[in-house]
Length: 279
Image 1 (cartoon, rainbow, N blue to C red):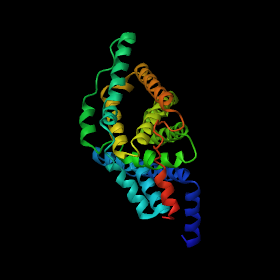
Image 2: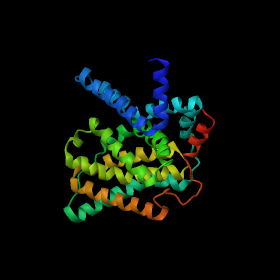
Image 3: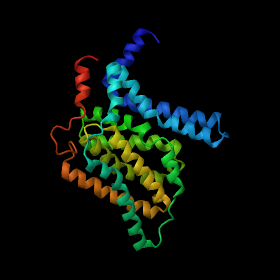
Image 4: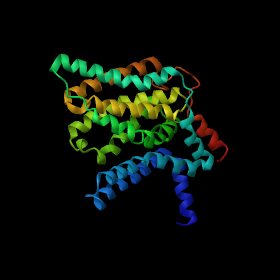
């Protein structure tokens, strides 16, 4: 690629960083997952698991590559350092750990009152969740660390959350066979929309803590699997409905524009500072 082509690519990325992020994320993840299916379809579980996890890193790899291209080494390093923003208040950690558990248990309780005994718990998944790389870590540098701040420069926090939700769901299709059924694809989208709002709310109000959203992502995935929420469509629908109520409460209380009652919650400010310095 000649210098003119590189310059043109960089200019396009500067003008449309979010579009570039989504394109690169899908390109990396879907190529890895596609090649895994074609080249090593009959390999052992361990290799398939490794390929799966490598593909999950697409959002983070895209975010780091684009941060480096747009803002230089300092930009990429700043993004990486956000995992160290841990001083966010104990209340945020309690929410990240307990919110989905409370809603999941409430959903199972409501299901029991209406439909009878809920699906059995899936306790085996607990050890997988504990032993593997925390779910969310390969993703959150991208969805929240890169895409959200760039979207917030021109759109409200609610709109930014909805945009991320749509692409987040589409990105999952190759690794979620259940999403080939349009009914479950729709239900998954209805679940991810309020989840995306909650993720944005956590990230904005923690002033860009990757650690907090990774923790929330990890706990949410684990709780949903352990409580076997997808085990019955009606249980899943009740759980989704409860998350919509939670997201609606957050929007009403904090406002759709910023999802924050703090005027200083400006996580996109660092991006502007880097651009102003021509990093």
